[in-house]
Length: 145
Image (cartoon, rainbow, N blue to C red; front, side, top):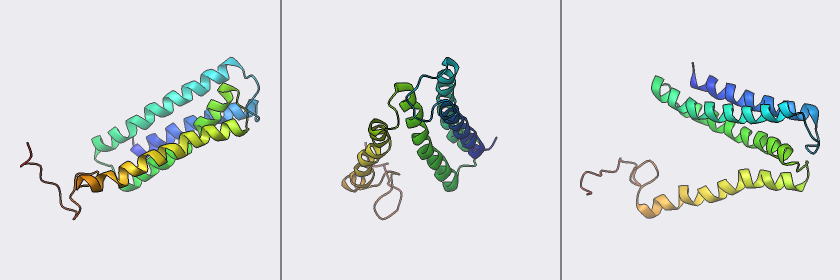
C-alpha cells in the first residue's frame, strides 16, 4: 500500500470521529452516547498508528519523497484541529475561549518551541540538523572520537 494512502486513510478515520461528534452536538458541550466517545477514541488511536506506520512503509518500499513528507505534515496539521474538537467535546469545554486556548496550545506553542531549535541551535553547533556543514558538505565525523 502506498504511504500517502496510509496517511490519507488515517486522516479520514480521524475526521470521521469529528463528524460523529458534530452530528450529535455542534456546541461541543452536551453529553453524547457512550459509543460516540468510544469511536472518537478509537479514531485517534487508529490515526496515530497509521501516522507512525506511513513513514516506515515509505522507507521500506523506497518511495519516500519531499512531496510525501509535505502531505504527511499537512495531514498532521489538519489532525491538530480534529484533535481539539474531539478533546473539547470529551472535556465538555464547549466552543468558547477554552477550546481556542486548547487549539493555541496544541498548534502555536510547539511551533514557538521548535523554531529556535531548528534555526538557532544548528548555527551554534556548526552544522545543521541533517549533519551537514554550513557550506552544504556532509560533516566528516571520522576524526572525532
